[in-house]
Image 1 (spheres, rainbow, N blue to C red):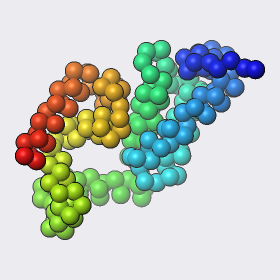
Image 2: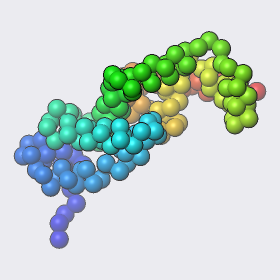
Image 3: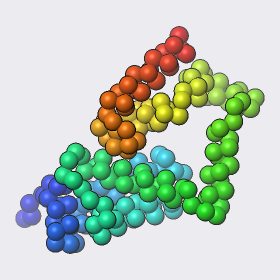
Length: 180
């Protein structure tokens, strides 16, 4: 009968001894969760699978160092999310697609079709969300859609926790005003 080790114990065993069983246990615990979370950000399953593998490879090789502060899941999410951004910034077809989407995202005026579809699908909420600044939308994405804590969102977005709280409050206020 084996004793269940904590996430921190598993990470220490992987880092110190290259403990393969500890690594496998960590992978079993978090790979499905990380895959599901990343699929919420990227529709390409192959890219998500590659990013999950790269994330755990970084853990195995020790290039990603856990400071034994905070939640292991949040730490893995931060690594995975950054690797996903790197993958999506790649050259070739993916890079061209990213550029095309960026051009669409930064247009000043939504097309008539987009406005009609947004109104049909989401009512005023879609319009209110599109009027938020990218910084406020990013905080809402991390805290509401991804369900991260303030501290996890701060790590992911590379901003102080107080800034996450302020931006979340400002976003809620703007949404309330837009929907009133």
